[in-house]
Image (tube, rainbow over all chains, first blue to last red):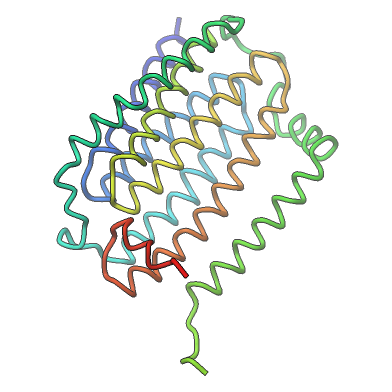
Length: 169
Length: 98
């Protein structure tokens, strides 16, 4: 009972946050609204017994990545006249919605073909740090290493791109 | 029911697609892409719960790492373009053409 109530709350909040993201004009308002989506998604992960992902969604996504985005938005000190005019925003939003509807119907049909089950509390240890870590480092070791190389490349690339450079030699 | 989570993930994904399609402000487009990644994360975790199998959690972790790398690089490019042009329009990305 409580689980259903919590799911409804989190689902409504996440959809409202996403709507705010695509409707608000200033990116700062959009970022704050997206933060609501991220936090309610963390709640949904907790309802699905994904304890590690719940913590990481809050710490890494809502904490680190979004604070990086908000930091850059504040760093650029965006004035309203710098934003693109977007006079036809409503038209494009409606057109995008119409264009995406068939895809959504297809995906919903696919979902309906899948087996269904009520969500209850999973077995002890499902989704904990130890269990996910064991799978991660035993069966997914190569993707883990590739992702570490990707992060290193992104770090070096960001420093090279955004850092100061000497005048043309 | 697990279907509700999957339907929510479809809705969030479609909202992300509409955001990318309809908006021209760079930051909004970027966060719409993140919204799509998050919707796929939700689907992975719902499937992991359905199958009682934690591989979906690992994939969601990998997606988070990719999103972090994407954020770092994309924001660096945006700072450069904003210095160059003073605009936040996705159209200024045509400057990146060789």
